[in-house]
Image (cartoon, rainbow, N blue to C red):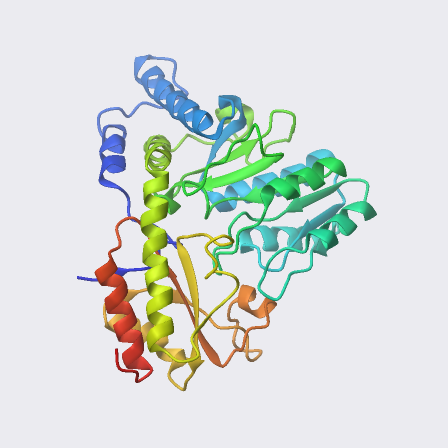
Length: 379
């Protein structure tokens, strides 16, 4: 049996989520745009799901728009805010997800925006004083900063960023793909214009996500072609995906505290065990700090070794699935843009372990044992 420790990439679909989806893959098949009974039945299910998500986020259903996932939602929020509102200046960081970074870089290449990068601390946290200085320079900026980093797990204070953006009249978009379903997001408290979620990060299906757009933030659609999603996203809805998304988020909120405590205990167990058996082990970013990091992700910095390039392969043949990537060490090695931005040592091994409610303490112990063997340490 394989051990899956790559939940930041995707999570297994919960059985209850799959059961909720099944009728909409078989018997309940109407097109929600059709006005007959088959269509109305499906349309009602979509709107019920929309209300479920809105209630969980303390938002209104009219602020929730379904997308194909986080990447489309990020593109919609950024591109449509720039184009609709005539924004000429954007602010982000060099450790954002590529859905944000590449979108903004492309807009800059096209001459539509000037792009600024906020400074980061050595361990990857936002320099809020520098962010404020950047906001002061422009009349209206678009700020895009993620809540939880997908590689190093650092948490960003989106409450503080929202307040700064409000003070300086800026638009605030946050990619919350990694933290959605793991933390409460109260849209009546957060000063955010656009926020993003993706079902497959919290035990829902792939290919479905959503974009929250504050009702005061009016933007034009990104995908044209139909009147779906109140004219905001053309295309027939992914009905079963929407049902699964709502069910998965509902289950995540119902059990959030228990899952938080359990998964954090697995992460803490791995940190402590690795420190005991591998000399000079470290942790990239601030991921070992439980107060400042996402509890589902741990990015391990391993000692220099000739075998580091084979680390993921060696884990895989030992039935452990994880992900990694060192900082760039040459022009031919693309590496991790996040670790490169933090200037981590490219000679050291870097591996991301990410956990879910389905992982066990025994799996953590086995993984640490195998890592100790790789680095010739007795457990």
